[in-house]
Image 1: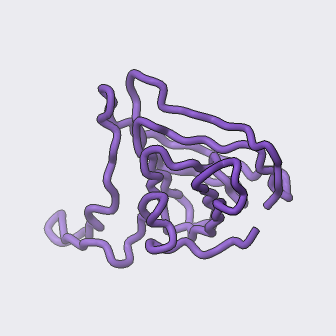
Image 2: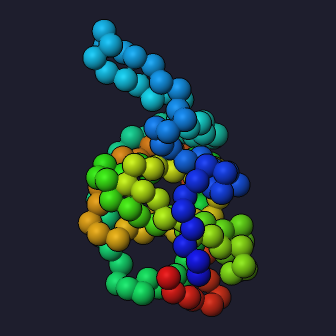
Length: 155
């Protein structure tokens, strides 16, 4: 599978790319800080959901990386932003059983992503141990669907 650079345009069918380039810049704290504003739309209110902010640590999977499943969150969006400046991979698809719908992106360590509600994606794929800031949905209802792939493949 071809791994392509993560860009706003390429990732648009799956959600939003969070990065400072092109963001709305606001000076704050008496001009001693800059805020890169309005980076993503947090979509978590369905069925009584609320915003959940958390941190995660991830470790690399054995290489080549076996792709055997995909997941999605039907009730809310999900943001992952790295805390270290280390590249990582983002794997998404339109239909988990159609390998031609899969796209793999290489994100820089300064790019985060916001999976739109209901987008099929693989859990975190890191190339070295890495920490992430996460914004997602917490609340009632089943917000996780997982599907095993009929045919496993590798990155």
